[in-house]
Amino acid sequence: MGTYNDQRFRPLIEIGDQVSISERVHITCIERIRIGNRVVIGSGTYIGDHHHGVYRGPEQSRPDTPPAFRPLGGGGPVIIGDDVWIGDNAVIIGPVSIGRGSIIGANSVVRRDVPDQTIAAGVPARPIKQFKYATSQWERICADGPKDTLLTPDEELRDSRA
Image (tube, rainbow, N blue to C red):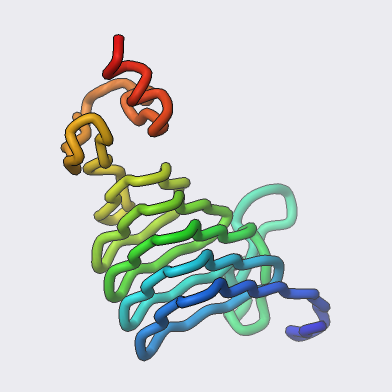
């Protein structure tokens, strides 16, 4: 059990096999963080499942309360799939899930889910490429395309056979 001011938490951090965590990586957890197998985390990365303060809902933190005295909360679980590569200085704040085989670009801020086999980059991080099994290539995702342009590997193979 962990405590912060008068709050009590039961944080759970799970780290898979063959994970490489570089220097200056900061992981903060009050709920749950899961890092899959064979994940590489670049230097200076921050992974957290909470904020200093609550900024949604009826009981929001006030700006005249020093951050160290604001309650922890407002986030959610961070789930990082197997075979993910996280570039240097990335920031990952829950609730978020990063899919299997994905790549997070250096200096990116991840606040939304990233599908399997997707390269996401930027502030905020957005999907920019997805691996296509039909061509064995990472292919650019149209920025103005519909949200359903991201296909699962099974959907992609089914479409390529049609």
